[in-house]
Amino acid sequence: MDDQGALPPHVLIFPLPFQGPVNSTLKLAELLSLSGLHITFLLTDFIHTRLLRHTNINSRLETYPGFRLESISDGLPEDHPRSSDQFMELFDSMKAVTKPLLKEYILTSRRPVTCIIADGILGFTCDVANEIGIPILYCRTLSACFLWLSFCLPKLIEAGELPFRGDDLDTPITSVPGMESFLRRRDLPTFCRSGDLSDPSIQLFKTEIQELPRAHGLILNTMEHLEGPVLSHIRAHCPNLYTIGPVHAQLKSKLAGKTSSSTSSSNSLWKEDRSCITWLDSQPSKSVIYISFGSLAVITKDQHMEFWHGVVNSGTRFLWVIRPDSIAGGDSGSNIPVELSLATKERGYIVGWAPQEEVLAHAAIGGFLTHSGWNSTLESLMEGVPMICWPYFLDQHVNSRFVGEVWKLGLDVKDTCERDVVEKMVKDLMQVRKDDFIRVADEMGKLARKSMGEGGSSYYNFDRLLKDIELMNA
Ligand code: UDX
Image (cartoon, rainbow, N blue to C red):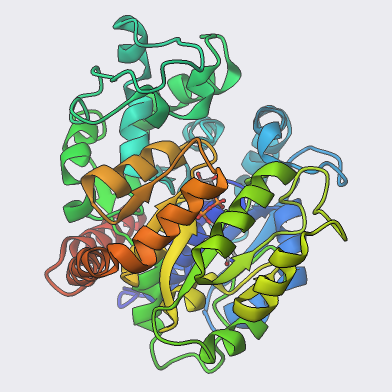
């Protein structure tokens, strides 16, 4: 790359400041760094502090020449929780405060920045790139099916399918090309259920997504064989797509044999409790259902109890991640029914945060009760683990529909978590239909590995991305 004495391209990467997007964008950054590019990975101060607290990130990144981890303010006070119901506050604050800081940062960077890679929902980054006169590539760390749905919000409004109130949720939605035969109101993001077109989330996704074509290209953490039909619709708006997923698996295969510690790839914003791996080691093959609702979902105490009863009544072994902030009003403390405590001691294990990729790759795991976050979906798919989907918000509702109806990788139980339903679903996934689901999931995992291998679409697109960035440096 620098055979004529030229410096390698310097890419400034700016992710959306939440666990899922930070995780996959950091993996993309590492992949680019392994290919010889200089990287500045710019986080918000809030995320940076948490990442430093809970991981060995600095010593890990030392092994990458020319990699810098930096941070700037998101404009919110330090003690602001930045929770999932405060998205808009964060976005507004970043537009006002972070935008000028980002511009200043790039203009004063000792190494000139060749191009920016920023999350496509942060439209102000494109303004900054244009003002400075450097190219920008957007990345979206959510599914392509959600991206396409967001593109179609104006169509839905035009067709009178939006707005609606949270009723008649089985009404078909027919104005999203490619999804006419299976999409229902309940598969749209929950912000569509407000009955109000001025809902800030509808406005955000409607406007920011239409702006994606302003960038030189769009990087997606997905695969052609998985989301091909939807991708062809997106290409009509953004012709230069780089489908390079799943990035976590790409990185894992590039690092195979190079890292010494199994914890070394963690990008967790919570402390990982590795004792669950020891517990899993003593469980029979494919006997355990892993339960996690990701980094942002908050459930009520009642929902928590319904899930708990349902899983226990199914008789299945379980490993459950209960994040400290994930139950509204805190957990049930000492008021836990005795039958739940006993059953949990006997065949369950609860942690505050797990090394999820490692958990899903463990031989004892036979299923995943998930919120259908995009990273969780890809991580499960790569390991051939079938899913029960209980989506919380955003892309998760359409992801879970694809898992259940299109990819046949599991069961979509959105909008209900009554104990009887949970019990039946767990039994279906882990016993009754186990072999069918595992066969489909294994097949999917194989296809994913093929797309990452030489000659595969994700391999080819990553190579094309590198070459295009090098051309920007010429
Ligand atoms: C957010 C959005 O809510 C979601 O809709 C979108 O798809 C991505 O960003 P999040 O809750 O962060 O979702 O879910 P997900 O995308 O699945 O990411 C969670 C990440 O945390 C995964 O990479 C997972 O491996 C990791 N994780 C989760 C752990 O490492 N340990 C855990 O205990 C739980």
